[in-house]
Image (cartoon, rainbow, N blue to C red; front, side, top):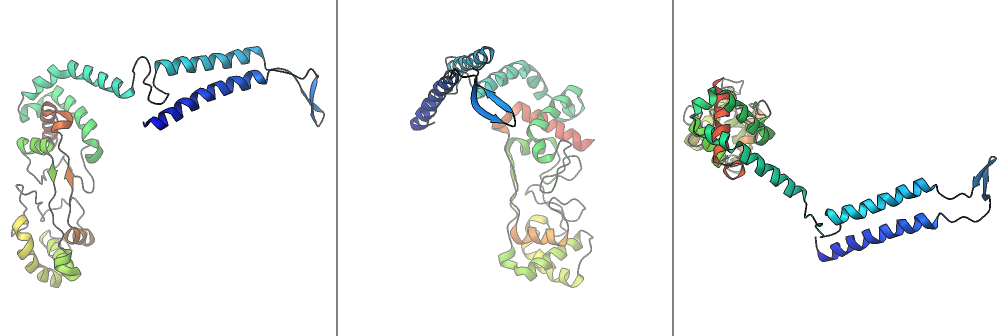
Length: 290
């Protein structure tokens, strides 16, 4: 917080506390008359001071607020005499948890992928790590959604081995499907989309698919292969099955061809550490086996 806002908050808070106390005691004075002179429908407003119990309760609340602002942050840049912060509290609890569970993580990190997939504790720990770090994109059941792969089936863009999964979690992945709309034009994009649907055994326009075959063999074959089976080394998906990350409708495929795809799987090496990456990779590896 800048020094200007620091003083704005500090002065505003102090003036507010003094102001409410002044209003409290200023309104305890009475005129000496029985009523204030206000009357409506036979009801008169008496000129009585506020009850003492209510006044003392308000005073105690103000005193409490002053003590609180001395102990904890709340007045500009003043951190309070205890120097407490929610971030510090979180970091302290996280550090304590790391120390507590470090032996467990270390033991599980020495297991192979198959051992992790079969070990009950490893699966429990892996699931917790998955829910905390992966479920936002892949869902709590790891079934994924549009643009986020299903981790429970046998379709793996970058490979299904334990090492491949661990590499994906550790270092992340970046989709490199280029946009071909400018090169192909709308007619070319539609032709390629029909060719892809033909390769997948889906309904298509045969004439357009034949025209799209030429384009496919020119610009798509390098990654997806002549038969459309894909290439795990390049992250190129298989175009001949019924697993489609962005949908298999003509419109969805045309959108992919026209504008490309740039999905990003973030690297978790720095986020959760190598031991946890190893464990969560084992959990995901086990899901595909089940």
